[in-house]
Length: 277
Image (cartoon, rainbow, N blue to C red; front, side, top):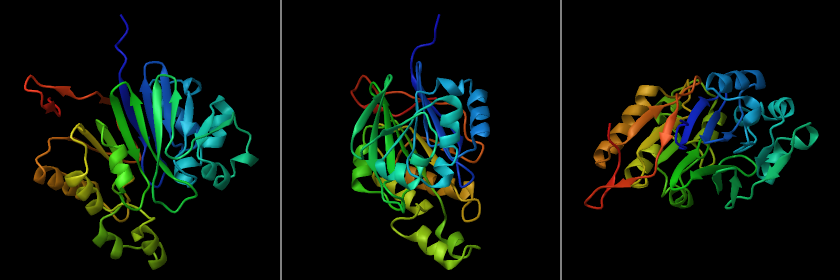
């Protein structure tokens, strides 16, 4: 007897060494970003039990190499189409690459991909036309935002029905200021078009996280200006202060196992049950 269809995701890699997240529901499998080399990306997919050629599409959040460097070669080898904004297509110079095809995703629009629906959410980052994603199957949704300089009201609204959120927690402010980067890079990271600090994520978790959300993944942690336990502590304090019970996962260059995303159920009293072990 076949297993019931469910929405689930698995981070294949996270951080400056390369970002990619696998999302599936039934026979539909998509990849969010392809910042790993094509061979490594294929190996990680196969380790997750997924044939690389079975991907329906690769969606690119933006053109920076740690999110897109493996996309063209992977598309060419495995015959998988790419999808992203017009800005990403131009900035990544994909018109000069031999690829299986490129579908335009307009910020603010949705696209049906097999059994999944993907919403592109514009985000502030120093790229041509960067987006976050909301991937939905039925009433279950994953919010995915791994490069952005600040959390916007539109992002909070877009993630308002998500049961799982993967969001970057890139740096700890003190570690960045005292760290080894040149000041020009520090200014870029600190800018409203740069990256999220642990404190930014903590504020989002305390005040903007959807009541339905019961899984949070912290992504894109810097290896030089952050530490997994520092990021975890900031997030846990925020969740505790707001009275939230949420499963918390810290991602790294090796990724994660599968994380299931299920629509919130209501108790007999009509209240949302966040999660139970």
